Length: 239
Length: 386
Image (cartoon, rainbow over all chains, first blue to last red; front, side):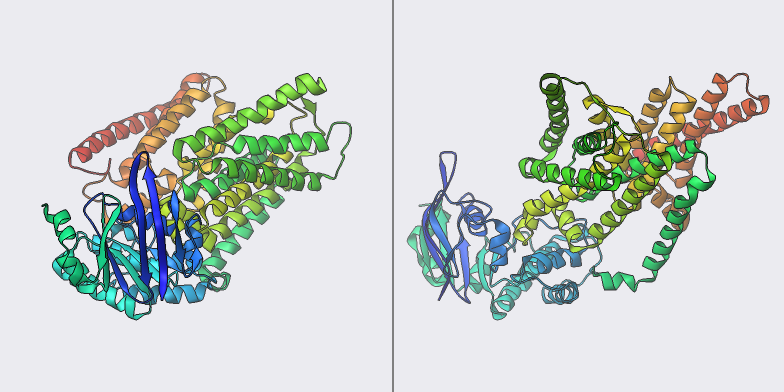
């Protein structure tokens, strides 16, 4: 069953087509990967899906309902949460408050403060944050900030998670932990849509992959198909 | 976060009871103080409550609003319309409430229009609002009603004081509960990263507009009661841009980070202003300006930041890299010394002892100040805080 589908999604920045005529779909319960060289339009596509941008043309449907044009907080409350390439953590707030915000505002039905507080602690355990929860999130290491970001997104009781380059800048050990976290998130029943540059990670963890280049979709399929696609190899390695 | 969690909190009760005691003391004040002090205190209460209500919105979100004078002025004019010299149209308390409501609506409108602007653009637009309303009223009075200004019903000093106290209490309670509620968390998240807040489910526009309007209520109410002291008001008096800048200055003076910072800051600031104005009517702006500059340069986190650093250095001993707390005390001492010195020079007829004492204080203060400056310089070279 398709949880997210996009039809001829297009977005221009000035005269430049950042995303043009992209058709895609994500099945419920899978881990879907999005790759492409720098400037391919990956984050723009995420911004279109999460409501930061409105597509110029085309339509995006989430759980069968049209979401293109809705405000970010609405889309979030429908069950779609995201993380950011540049983390965007609330630096002056304790880690636990970062997560609390997601539970208090992002859930479809709302939550009592007591339940939200309990949820926040559990989620920080789930993502493996081992430092004290009261330290301001801005003082955490990059990997811990990313963990808080994932926990904040999960706190909204999302059915679908958009992960934007969660593994960039991590050490090999941390990357392995992050890959394991992605599978654990999927096992919770959350569909994962992830942008990633770390090939080993994306090939290892994704069920299907889509490749963008200059805003256009050039391939999609299983990791194996993508790895053997002539077009993809050309884009990444040159002709 | 929950009301239940902090009513069971011991600290909450201690604070609550001491606050009640202070309020009770304030309430009985007119019984044993002269009317000058009642009026002075009323002005201080007003400036504190305007600052606190400014902080409700601008503190956590970081949107610097300069619309305070507009909300205040709307309150003044509401009062002038409903409480004219010729006799009250409506009872005083009702007028105060209506003024708050009118400001609330103006806040909603202005917020909906301006809150999509960020940073300096928001500040400029909100300030434009003050001038826009002021000019419109001037035009209206000159061309439509053919009047200039209005006469306002005089209200007794003690009544003004009690009404101001009531608005003050309402402001503090509102500010406290907003800060402690999940609404406060949302406001803070908007200030830290608006985009992330929106993607975490916060309806950022609604939260911003409503809070902006709530903060306007108290400014409007304060303006309404303030007007009854003035006898005559016109658009220049009602929409005085000073009321846009004072809350910002006072909040920074006290320290924006904490709840009590702006309260203490505004109280001290307004008292200092009054003191300087009466003691040095001609030089007061110069002294005041210098003092403000000193505060911004040497206390970037305001009075509260200063006190926190003092406490920290007392607890843990002076840190290696930052200027120790006693140097800051000396700095204040120096300023105080300078002030007393100036006062003595001006009042040459004053007692000789005072003159000597002032000189000594000035000397010690000046020396301490110099010492601190050198330490600061050294600290700076060592990569310290200053």
